[in-house]
Length: 459
Image (tube, rainbow, N blue to C red; front, top):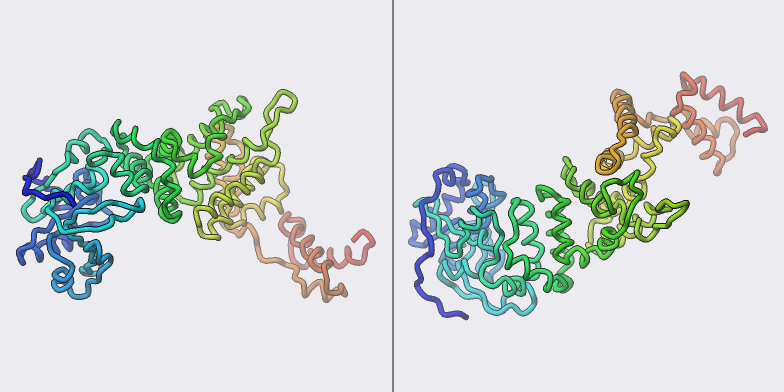
């Protein structure tokens, strides 16, 4: 453990007035309780960064020199979330706040956890954190910000910079490689040069950490980044995307027919779609990322044109393997694979029968499929006539269900003398197709026609 000194903060300045105005008063109440009992206590980390950026924090972390026993005694109902790290969850008027001791960390042996921790002075605690913008403390009572590592300067420069030696910080917790990208792309910052250069040589270390941690961080990047496509490009440039999705390199190298895809290769097309997303839905984002992942494996030049026969089916298989590897919920995997497998068929909607169109629009995944189709068109040849046709169809069904209740049931067909078996299903399907096509004005008319047809040899 490093020897601690009573070093003064590199910077202590008055907090802007809006920090107190925007801070959760319950967090301030907790801090006042500590200070009343003689324990320094500050807002810590990301919430300070967000308030300086005039963003509303998602949560408020608090750091203090009080030990776990003192914290739990001061706040009845609190519970220890990480005893070895001095972390306590403190309830306050319906919300829980994480309170942690100022600490120093021993050596990291597993790429995630320190071998030991010890109480420390605030500046030592700041120096163990990941990035300078996340290592700020704020006393909202005395209106003072404590900056020991140059975090305020980096916020002004809009830079993500590791605290101290970036290679050491990334070796301590390998997930910080992904977190660097998330903070840069969600805050619209740039990676500091030294921090950026430290990432590619360590990218393979991501294979050593829990899949669930990678999944959660990666998914946050896709839905929280200001431009998710640029985030994917950053992951690719840093050598991280090939670890998560090996087919990504092939996507970048895969050419496409310029008349359909003037924007360029498959990865360029995918990045453009991600950047155009207006709905930050995780299943949609993953479907966009993976919708053309099967193209490199199916590419063939036929009649002087590049074609991708069955690329959607192959892509769905690759997507399923990738998503299961990330341990995504099985329902989400099924939905995303369905979107990938079916993304090309919407291009032929204008040639479909009304019964097929009704079934298409009636699918639970259709809203996502339609948005995927829009993005696909917008980021390529920009031919939007088919999308407009589908939008008009959606409007048409706004006042009626796309898939209305069936007029003819299996019981009706049994009453016509048809024995139980596959024939019942076939006739029922045929009757429903006629209903969806609007071939008959009423149930009675359809029933009368079906009775006649059952007696005909053509059936």
